Length: 348
Image 1 (spheres, one colour):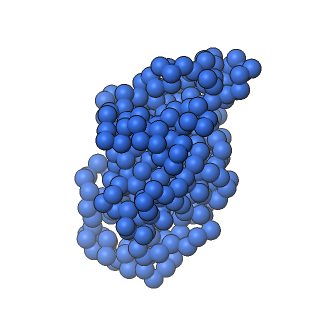
Image 2 (spheres, helix red, strand yellow):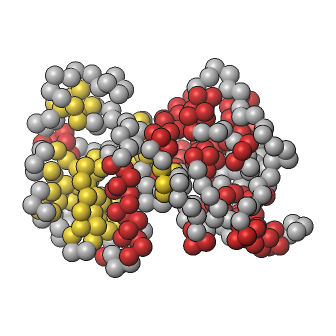
């Protein structure tokens, strides 16, 4: 049986006593401890062996495009998560390609704050990923339960998420869907970044079909009008996540639809101290810098965001241009902004 970290669940060599990533004590895995905390549900696939290697132990969860099963890796003697494309969408080529792209991207990122992918393939034309099995809940689930977090915890979570995102940016990958539901709290504590299905290489251009790619409440202005994205797009989204962690609310809590799109594109972010009188003004400075409309006015990189948030007194990002407005650079972007300004009752 392999050893694993009691906190981050990384498998480690037999001679290791303490996890080199977080310092937690290393435990010897047993048949019971390896599945503890997962509570897989029995399914008609239970006992089936995928590709001669992964024995399905039970059903764990499902999303819009995939189901996740707990499985035993018979070759490497470990418990893994198998993410299997949902039957209803397996014939949609674009979705299938997106699913496989997630596997390729995650293979290229090796970081303790990013979920690991061990294997990928297809079963009857349905793609699947084999990933590390994570115990715990998403940050979104935690916030639904507790509302908001104390400042020290929120800042630590933001820094761990930023570290994972900085690692992805270093290999040229922009996540594009940073939100609490895609930040997993392993055993309720350490952050792991999930779901790169919306991600793309930073060098790739945008297309008009990508207007709805992402989660609107966390989308930067350039995403709203489907223009070029880079690491600063993820900086904006993480700023929204930090705002929500500290206040229990979204910056623009107006439901969905054109009102929300308009606020994300045109309205300055409200100071989170309006909702939390005790908020450290230096942390507020970080949030408002991250959420500026013009990407040039945000932190220039996720690493810069991470460095500033780690200071005793964060400085915020300098303003490169005033006023802080987003100016679309493409014809399609300008048309989208014009339409939203009319719906949002702004002057053209």
